[in-house]
Length: 298
Image 1: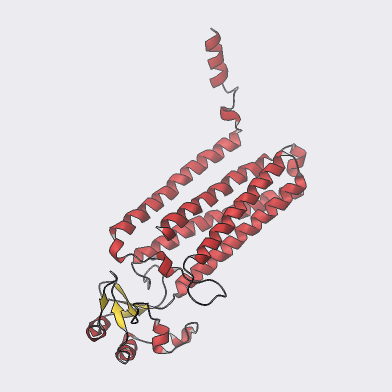
Image 2: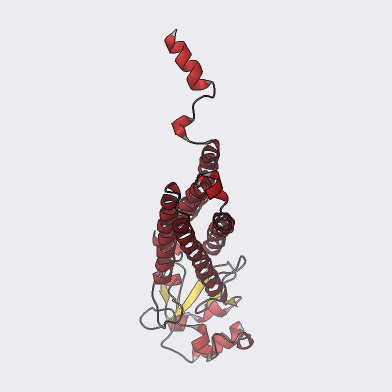
């Protein structure tokens, strides 16, 4: 009889599972469903990545630039972005901790730093997108959609801008044709063609790669100078979808931040909303760790 009464008490709505509020449970359900969505995207990326492994671009050869620094710095900027996002998660923990102590000023301080971290990450992501769209050194796209690059004697990708002696950042000078490129290439016997599978074709046998082909500068949803088209498609889709989550998180953080300043949660006697948005922000940070690992490092 006592066991039956306990069951009625347990399942009759009188107990909160794990002592969590309804709002927290709904947030957890949302995060679990969103985690499955991101898992599907990363699984699809992994499938296509290893299916085309021999011709798939190497991320550390693609993401080599750092704002205001010359030379190549493989994945350094992406690593900095990751560090910024992780540190914003730390400041979010401190904001939640301050809320549990009803420390309004502490919540304001740490949430402000979290918002700054989120905005900085979004700005960095925009810069990376801009650089990816503009391109780096250019490539040649063959009639079968294969991407080949011009390389020097050390098998390092040689910039088409340098070969054509034009300014990389002046779009008005980017109207050179494949015929112009072929003529400039013929005068440089030290250059060769590297195919998508990393095999190098000697200079004297490279002229065929300028027939029925086109110059590709940058990357979009149609052409990709870095290699396989799906590499660019997945980059825009996965990082864009994650960026939308970060943007949404920043907007929510700002709304909660304003409510903290005006004393909404102080009057309620608790800062549970700060904790809820904290769960979402930690999720966004954790997803980026997986994106960084599977897209950039693997």
